[in-house]
Length: 259
Image (cartoon, rainbow, N blue to C red; front, side, top):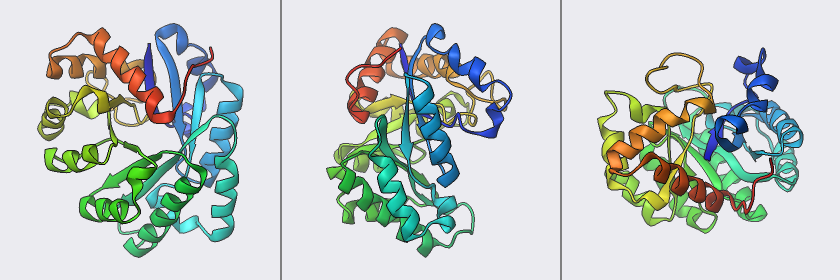
């Protein structure tokens, strides 16, 4: 069965049919999902989801674009939440220079602090890096992020940067973008990287794969990503599903999924 390593089912895009959708995922071939927090409110919603659904796990953290809300009291609270059952990672954290706010120094400060948090609670990290390749890598190397391990979510750089992260022992998250006709750089990365470092993700409700590009995404679209990876790697779709499922469980240190 398929393991979705990065979803946002707490998003308001699922307000109308969240329960119906989530209740049907396992019957549709989705074994497990990790719901990823983006802000403090998202952490609270993620904790509700992991308590409600046995097959949903959680990551707690604050997305770089939301770091303006952070302070040391909230960071301490995040550390408490990170120690709860079924919280399997710190994330998503990192740098996003696509937008001007929050300013870069604010993002860097809280990225470093959340990397430190991950080390204290001994959890892997879910890294968001957009238009910030060098700074992200520099901070991770300085912070010895390879000691916690984790995944570079929605990997969007080239093979040179992929090599850096793979050498650090990180996984690369591959989602709907790999089905886009103009995603030549990502397709090259998928061909280049070893299968034992690849995990599947949706980033839902965002980044739906072709043929549903532009529509709300969900874990139900992952077979399109599986098919694209299988073609790029020259292996059967079932092998992609099997290997990425095993990789996801190693990444998040999950032995068995409850149904």
